Length: 575
Image (cartoon, rainbow, N blue to C red; front, side):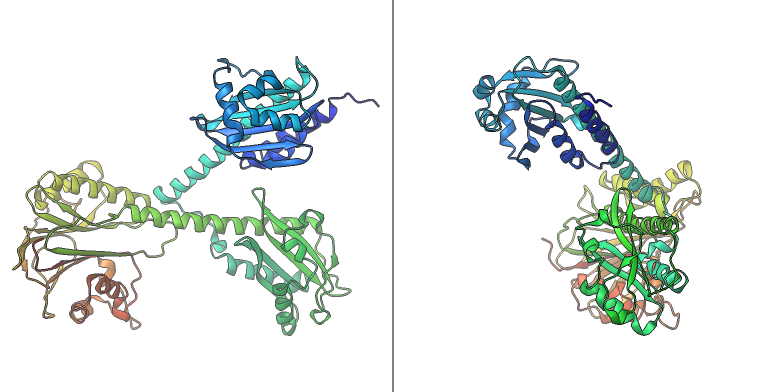
């Protein structure tokens, strides 16, 4: 059976298209792409680059028959400047240039082409994602005009690159959407036991031994290497030997752990290489792959003559489940970090400076899977020289709580910044919630400070369904101002009753959410009863240390829910 000269390229092209829809980035295609182009007739070198909208090259690769190399971005700069005025509008067209033409505009490139044995340069630039451009160039030695098959191949490769880039962009967009859903839509990934991956994998090996094998181990890819996470031996007395051997790399699977030869391993039994005292001379290894990447290893060990040998279909099924469990746990941890990041963005990064006053705040984040809490605080300087501190607690958790938190902060801070009183701002927020979001409510407390004087500062306190603030005097006395009011977002009338106080130098006002007072000790008692005496004992501490001691429950109480605390101390200076 005869073949045409183009059959090898057709096979290469098919392989490129397959890889295009598995690659996470176009870099994953580099080896196949460049080596494939070098098989074309008379092609001596390949230049590839990815350029930003301003022409800056982010990636520049060069390949000849000595191999594929990453090159300085400057190599392509002259080529791009030269091609910028030559690229026609519409469909990309391959430019065909003699080496002399290239030498006039890009002497460094011409020198490389000459050294590779090329006498002409074919170049194609094309659009990729996000307004960037791709550039592909071939150094050939077949003369001009170029062979039609080579020109066609250049277009085909460009199409593969564009498709890969679009696919990678779609993957990134999907990941972004998933992250947003997890944060803003109260997402829960329902990963079950695999949320705690170590415990889950330990359960897997305990189930496998002795039912399926005489020993088992699972390695997980962490910090750039495979580490043993779970293992089991049918003889419990020999389990430490198995563990020590795996940690020390004294087994035949170490080359798979190091990633030096994973492709040659399959589920067929083979010598384990373990020390004789382990009594597990045979093993089967499955490389755990999820979403196109290796995430771990599943190894079953067998004693001499053991009949516990699961078939390959079962092994692959189990390996696939384990791989997804590991991947889900990794995804969960990434989402958890995103939730914590969003939680922090719902709080002010820095509290404004107010002459005569010192501020400190802290926030204890409870572990509620992938849900955002609704506690918040803030400080708003007002046009007349006053400043209003506020703290709130939105009912519920997750995306609805986050949305209401954002709405409440924006509404209150906007009204206060425009000069409204705290009472007017609370009434306005209450009316807005009753109009737009019935059924969602929150609690609020505010403290409006008059301009501070060296002798003291006056303040007006309001609470709407919120725990009243505490005033910690310099001598350790603790008082609770008699302010009260209804929940915000429930009834048209808040029935606010304000309280006035005056802080003298060294006095501290403490605003907090109920997560603090609901902390419990070992006997189940609430922190609320001990909060005032605990505060009195902390009076001499700097504000940050005082708050740190509060959210740890004074060393005796465990804060199990979200808790925000905002403290304001009069420093005795007006500036």
